[in-house]
Length: 321
Ligand code: A3P
Image (cartoon, rainbow, N blue to C red):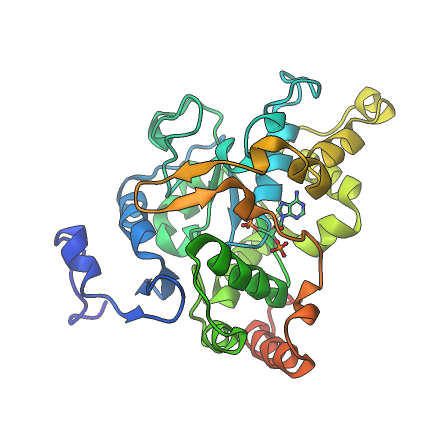
């Protein structure tokens, strides 16, 4: 450890004020443990690091922002609860997917039966944007932490960047040039970034422990959603029975969680959640829901620039986009 590094034992607020900060995005980002965090999430992140205890039967959905969190929450929730919930009056018809699965680092008072994640009954279905393996190396590599199941969803970084760029405008009313956003992203400065380091943490674990860490890509779900849903259900220990297959349950899961179904529901068109220090409209999580939209916003050269950076960073890992 660096002797000059500020101590984690001082008050979180004081500690955070000692960390590197970068402006450029709608809120400044603060670097902790090599990753960049939004300020309001960082204090919760420190709390997670100090207190979060994974359980052996936890399912944790992990994404970087704008990589398909909303979709993955909807899919995993529907798959894991299908024995007790009917499609006809399913919670997804009246509740935003983000409010059905709680983020570890962002307690959401709008979740029905909200409790701090520590107080939730087992088995828990949780979500996070955090790089858990570097944040909680001991907890995640031994005991219950290495028995829980993790689903990691990532996405072509060009689409993730363009999605983020739009999101900043919509939610924060903030305008920055896409060139500027690209330059920051290529430097590794994006929420939860560097993008490639976040992916690699989970990629390596998925290779080492494929029964515990499932690595998915947005593009792969988009290409064959029924196949992806079967894969997800199998990994989560809830494969579809022959009877479910013949009655079309996998297809029904895909339909219910599709961009078209979800964006057609009133709950996802209006309202939002007040998180105290920021307001999140429900509709902000849905934009186009396609792959390759980056090409409508970035020049070919910009796309190649990002591809090159990412390729270099991922070299030798076996992971590519
Ligand atoms: P776009 O901005 O490219 O449309 P997150 O949930 O991690 O914030 O990611 C948001 C991105 O996922 C947005 O991408 C959004 O439109 C897309 N998305 C949300 N729900 C989806 C769904 N059910 N199916 C496919 N894409 C979805």
